[in-house]
Length: 357
Image (cartoon, rainbow, N blue to C red; front, side, top):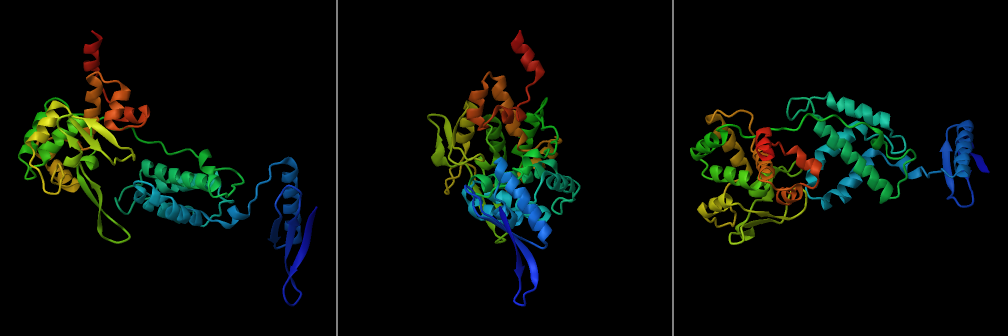
């Protein structure tokens, strides 16, 4: 049976009511309420849950806010993740929208309202509405933090993980931009005119290997905490290239796994033509330098809506058109699942028709 007793101050005035439940097989449960009726009601429900075997200890989840959870996740988990720095802005957004709620009070309705409000918010960084992909990443981060709380930190959530019951924002169709007609010739001609001598070799190499820009090039980003530029990628190194075996090893990639990329004859020819830099980089330029030069080259070539990352799309599709199977392509490109691979693969119907005979 529950024990209900008054809590009094030093003058003997009742300032609250404490409910205490002692039951064999369960931890001591104690909670204080403003009125005796609230304490009695809580004790009745809690004892009933114990009898039915569905009781969940709520103390820690009631005392832990979403802000507290995300701060712990930020300090204990993010430093162990490659690319964890990308989560900082997502944590700030979640703390601003949901941080005041306790984990016990957090429910799917609150998260759905957060989702809808974010989708109608203007981003101060871009001046445009926050995109669905950004909100999906934020909800994914919250779900991972809640899972960590229940599975590793022993914080029981009475209603389960609420993010699992919330519909994620619908994403726009994946880009299917590929080089068409004589765009590759025009692009390479424009690249040859660039003041950045590394642009044309980078473009050809990207088309031949399906490497991400960050895997090929040194990349720097602004650290919001220190205000300084921090190197996020060292780019492809000559020490990781084996021209005899025609391979390029990538020890660190976006998804965290190392991979070795086979090099086509055209890719090897590009490498053979490059000078050796003193710092060991294959391409003696930066991600930012190539990005700016690429935009200008597209403008000179009169090519619209083409991004450097689209060259990875192009390269992946060409691998399939050459007859490589999905497992072979994923080992080259580094995609972990077929679904991810499909987003980058847009085969030309006319090329498939030729193979059908």
